[in-house]
Length: 410
Image 1: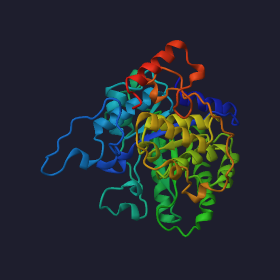
Image 2: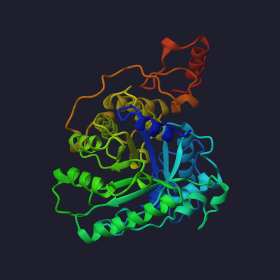
Image 3: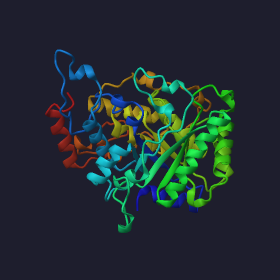
């Protein structure tokens, strides 16, 4: 059983369960185009992939972004790490890895594809689409996601592609626009139900001025969610929600309304590492049971380490600030220059996340499962990436001393 299904079953049986679903959003090609794979400052262990650049025009370093093969390598690594429950991709990327490669066979990770791309995510260079009121649009087709063809042969049982999709809605407080968006969602739901395709629902804040005060947006979104899903029976409802975190009051309001509705948060802009970790900690504290992080993971200095600490926070083993310090310890041990000095990375830059300074009581010796340093270090380590001498066997101490003498830490 996939970890997603096990956790959803646990939450259904006991809404108060501690199960928490993490999703990595690697679907940025549906929004940003060429820049979607992110900066080349972090590559998978496979290293750089061939690329063609005319030296009289520019160099690879000047270009600065990963290409698609490098992006796919990172998705493979994150999937094999096994700490996220969902890997969200575009339909094309999902075809490459899910259908053609079979990456998710035998994996605990569930593949998913973005099932629609409203115009507010059309964030191409020099474009103006994101500044216009969001309009519904769906470039992906359910059959293409499920089997890679316009029409799947459903007589053979399981289909080779992803059977989970993200559908997004944006409420603008505009009757005509919101009605049009809901009609599109209704058509998608009905098609998905007929084809046995599961989905989760993302609800964005208005991308233009809606007339709703910022402090009331949580209530506006919550009411729209409940109203939208009220006529939808269980067969057509989303597995869970993905919404902007508007603070504890709005989160608790929507969570308590219906115990059968699993509520999650979206990560939003990159921000500091403390922003990302505090958002996760606080949303979980007030009832969220899912987090889907895209830019926050994709722009991290070391994605595997970043995900490791996200998981440790959800398991209550680290508080946000301690996790930031431990993450920087891993970067230092790996010889990776952080994007920000530790003091700056410990700052909270999102006012909406500064309401509560309380956190999990720090623990200073947390073993990091699936530590990205493991390939370089065959000995136990502390949460800050330093060697844990107290728990080393003689053989591990010899390995550590040999590596140190060989200049591994120089």
